[in-house]
Image (cartoon, rainbow, N blue to C red; front, side):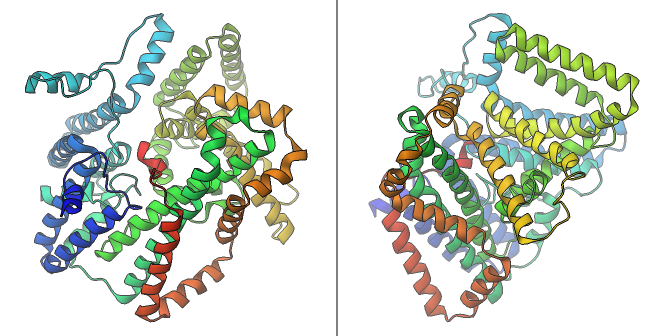
Length: 552
């Protein structure tokens, strides 16, 4: 009884995480209630909406009030945008929606980052203060809320993007507003994808709300298979190698030789894939058990033949969002815009300030002046600049979406450069049109290696840690100790090898594995769940590994 109380009462010590038993007890109780009400769509939607709010309360506490405010305000703004006939007023309502959503995102996620930038710019010593906590303490006449730091609400980037797409699509006349606030709240807060995606668009999800629940045998098989696969990815391929190898190396890269650091970086590529795609596999499976289809978010990204293809396979819901709501509005590869100029200026100014170097500032000014001069005299340079500037801006902003740090901007910029480089390299590459096994192997290896090395800026705790890593790889590779390292961490490297082998299996073989699972008796499926549960239990640690993308 005490355990159930802990599960269903708010406690920071017992969050509802997919990899913990508490969540599956919670889901079992919720699903039992769902089975009782699913035939009545209105009752079903209301029930799942309330469950989703409770889930977010269990995950983020009083930030559920922010989720409710965001839901109510955007529901009303969507209706205002749709009703208004005057273009200027319609744009005004849309601007209010975008500004309101981005205000909360910037306040909670980027306040420290912006204050640091202002301090660098003005030489001030401004300190971040949690204004909302100050108001809360004043309201309740207490000092319960901390005012010296701003806590990031879990999943704010995901549900903020969903609310933006809803209002923008109404403005573009691609969507009509939902009549029921309960339906809209359910669309925003549906608990399987609420805190770490995938990002769901209203046009994809809302029509499903009005349809009766129907879970066919094929959907049940696919849902249960996804949950099994997601648990293995997260708890074996991600958590096990993180706990037993990666965290040790990345916490103190200078304590390990270059070979060990290099292996840790390649291990991190498996960890972040297993962690994030594992979460979305479970989320899609859970939603499907309740009759709702969520979009595909990963498609074997490490099989990509180039950087552009990689971003069509990795975090697909974010990549498509950035394409449709940022890249194309900026002008795509056809034209520039005032927004392109403004954002470019802000980013370059920020880089110059963050560097704190006069040489870097002058170099940036020289490059900008040179490109502007050349583009004004040569149409080819102007065309190439327009074709690529919006792509680079999109990738830079995509990097900043992942975290309020210049290292994330660098990470996004490197990926952008990789895409731009490939656009021109493919025209002269001798193996671009070759489909031979050797050519495909080379292209996959090159792309995977480049993506992995950019992840150093994603995983590194700071620029100092990143510098230590480069120093060890450049000056202290330690090839003579490679065999010892492989033997010492043989369990970790075997798991890494198995993880990459399963990822690179041919799609036909993966389909046959699923077909075998699907055609097996229910008893065999139950046995598979027990077997996976036992393996995950063996890999489990009391200090559980949170999902990496919860921080975004």
